[in-house]
Every structure is written in structure tokens, then in C-alpha cells.
Image (cartoon, rainbow, N blue to C red; front, side):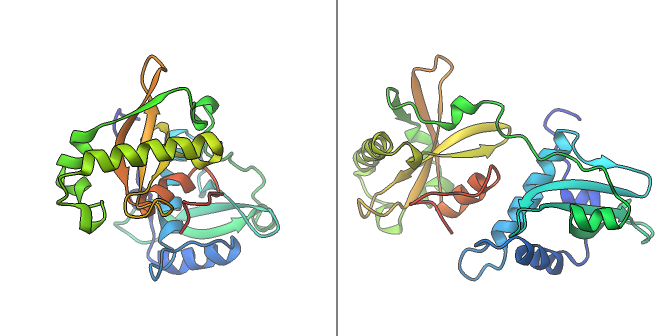
Length: 251
């Protein structure tokens, strides 16, 4: 694969009935898959980004008549769920057709007996746990000067002259929360890296407004606070690794 190139699900396969098939998957794997009224938006993000990851890892099993991908999801009975692609019979379209989501039992009844592994996010387990001995150094210029990032802050604060002080206080509080409960820092996967998400409470000291993305510097002595994400963005990234069990980050 060329550096910087990502194969996208809809480049790989013709998917004319995608929303309905995602709806079927949401019933197979019961979980909160939506933010408010955005039906299955979390699940769509999960499947599309998981496809990128397993394709990059050469974990899509490709045969003459079909392809198979491990979604990394489980049914309510803890059966692994796979995404099946069949040859596309529509001329002028992608080679593959997104057929649907199946358990191994269903696929074995169809004569399929070899199953691909899940995406691997555990190549650096140490990165998934916050080290409380390290300080957090936010990238203020990116968080506060970039207009797209500034708009992620609560609207009443976007024109405040006191943002650095507020952010510093929120970071200090987040670090104390992590020291009290290490699970406060939630791992996320983004562009080939494991990073940590920490809660940033600006308007109310008990209610997070944003999630700051942090990772260690090259000397492993400090965390760099790269950017702040909306809670929806943060949850989508965290859900790629596994079901998110967090008291502050949830749909």
C-alpha cells in the first residue's frame, strides 16, 4: 500500500443498500449506536474506519467469488460478526458488492470455513494507560487560534480573554481525576497511533465539554495536548478499539 493511502469502504465495494444493512447490524450487535437523532452514526463510523484498518493490515480474506472482513463486533450471544462481499454483477461499478453481515455459523452454512482476524490496536499496550508522573503540555496555538478548533469550545467562552487560564485549570483537574481513577483517560485510535482522551470541563467542573487528545513526547517525560475534540468525535475514535466503558465519554 502506498504511504498515506487509505482504501475506503465505498471505493472497495458497491453498497447501494448500506443504511438498511447497517440497521440490521445494529440489531445483531445491540449497543447505543447513535448520538441523539443521528441514526446509527457511531456504527457507520466504526465500520468504515475498521475497514480502513483491516485493509491496511491485509486482514481482508479475498477469494475468487467473495471477500470476508472481521468487523470486530459480537452479537448478544458473543458470536463474531463478519462483513461479506460478493462479486458485483452491476457493470461499470466496483468489483465487489457489500452483501451483508453474518455470524460464523451463518457463513459456515454457506460453505465458508476460514475467517479473518480482527483489527489489532494493541501493538503498544503501555500507551493505553496514563502515566500520572508526567505533566500535560497543551498546544495552545492549535486549540485556541485555529478557528475550527476554537468553535468546538462552548459558545459562551469562544471570545473569552481568559481561555488559557480556564484550559490550564481544566487540564489540572483532569489529571487529578485520572490520578484518582486511571480509567478516566480513554484510549483512542487515530491515523495509526494510540492516544489518550482526557475530559476537559470548562463551564461546569463536573461536566466535560471537550476531550483533549494527549500522547507522550519522544522522551516519554511529558504528555503533549495535541488538540481538543467534541465528545462525539472522541467517542467515535475511542469506539474503534472496543466498547467504551467510561463514566464521562458516552453517546
